[in-house]
Amino acid sequence: TISPDQKLLVAVVEGWTIQIWNLATGVSVGEPMAQPQWVNNVQFSPDGQRLVTAAFSPRAMQFLSDAKQSEFSPLDHSAYDACFTPDG
Image 1 (cartoon, rainbow, N blue to C red):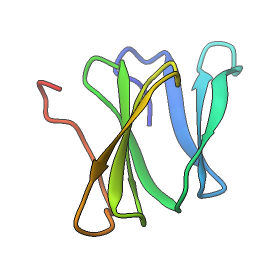
Image 2: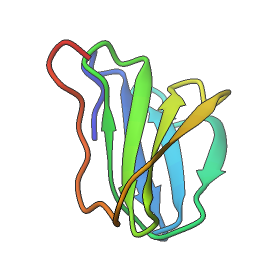
Image 3: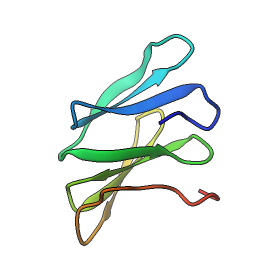
Image 4: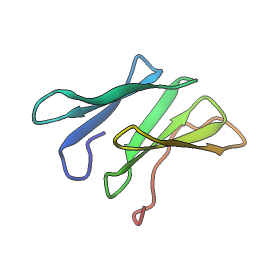
């Protein structure tokens, strides 16, 4: 997924890890973010400051795009897709 400002790319690597790259330089931004379960989807928030993942674990994970902080939201089941509302 490409960030709203078209400067960053976030992708799932080998199913379990999220990585962000700078599109202009091709250099990775921050450390890879390992996940406890297979990740189905990752999306930027409309402001490009947060990421949300959907995974086979019963929780959604949200990150600041600088990869320094995460929050866990419990779910009743695995998630195949995740997104932010237009207002974030």
